Image (cartoon, rainbow, N blue to C red; front, side, top):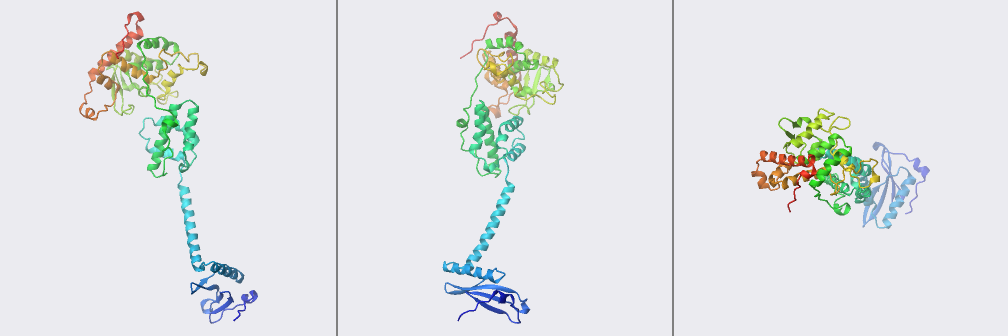
Length: 434
């Protein structure tokens, strides 16, 4: 039997009655007019058969033309073998999943941290007790954060890392590039441990191939060079405090960083001792140096020329000690390889016959001179404040050998006094032992 479709105008005039009306519009579309008791609302339903079973589907349309269009779309689905009811449910699930995915994406976006944020977190936790923290901060502020700081940590790739190291290689500071790469690796591994990122972007980078091989320095000043240094230092126009620092580093075999942070309160001129507190010591152990007369004279000179009543080597603002690199930079500035690279007329004033030297080489030189003067190796190790590598010895051999150390420093100081103060013809040079 033919179905007469309801005309739009007639649809508008449908009125609810005491009984529910079910009006067939054809093609499976039905108009349901609820009874007056049920509120008299109008809804559209689509009836169809799928796999031999009759099914109903409520439509979303609010008017007749929209309902017919919706019916036609479902009719097309049936022709393609798609169950409209199932498709409607799947559509709802897809919408829910899309909403959840978008919500998750927004949550992740809000939780994303930049490299600068990561550095702050690493600085405040892992670096909190690091003695080199100020230097690490300086290096990152200068060479890392300007390149990587604004990137989200999860977006950092190897190419970003090598952008930092390559710039350093171009500047000719390969060893600095090596150190910074090692520090970046520590920071990104910290991020992996904290579940900030899943993979460390530096993991597959070879430190040696990306930067340079590690260099183990073995520079030792000869006694001829020590005597030459005594002649050249006064002509180098360094600060008087820096001159003293050179001789203290040589005669006490201290680390230059330990000396940079020294306070006058650490020095006892009466007992002739310098106590390096554990917070300034590389191995975290306090160290007492028994000052020879040669070393003591340098500390007295420092006190005479002092511009601060706390720090032996105050910074320019007199607010703290100098940077640990300051003395090394001053000495290096008097050994410029290219004369034109430095405007100072003193840029080669400290060049010695054996090549470039650093304040740390003075520590090695002092230990070598001690050895050549017959001081026992274990005493020299104590003077250097080295940590015993053998665990058994470290546990059971805890003797300080204070008297032996004091004698070792005295012997070294006496030898340096001869080299620095006496006429060349009166000093017999020590022949190095093989």
